[in-house]
Amino acid sequence: MRTEVIHNPEEQRYEIWADDELAGFTQYHPYKSALAFIHTEIDDKFEGMGLGSTLVSGALDEVRSRGESVLPFCPFVRSQIEKHREYVDLVPARDRDAFGL
Image (cartoon, rainbow, N blue to C red; front, side, top):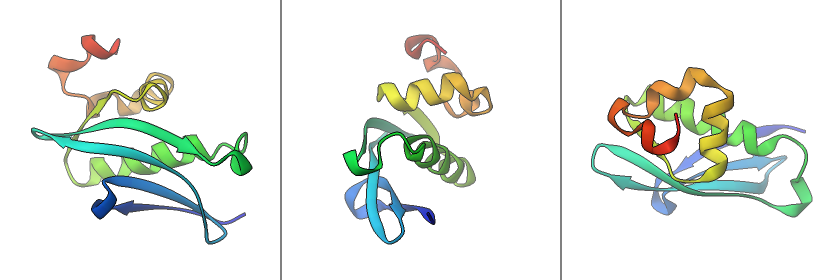
């Protein structure tokens, strides 16, 4: 299966496409100088395939490339940052305790 993570700024979300089919998204809202991630959803058809992790990693990599910060209100995004500590620096130091990071 071919996957691609795409930033859709009009919808304020990152999407993951699997073989030209929308498989899921992670929604954000701009907040001050950061992106506040609020919800991640993977279509039931694609559950258990690791697409959520691929989606969030792709989104975080793209946010890093733009020099922006992340506020992981979404529990799934927060858990991915906890598991993959290389993303902790995307969360502003002053906010890490609030997210248990």
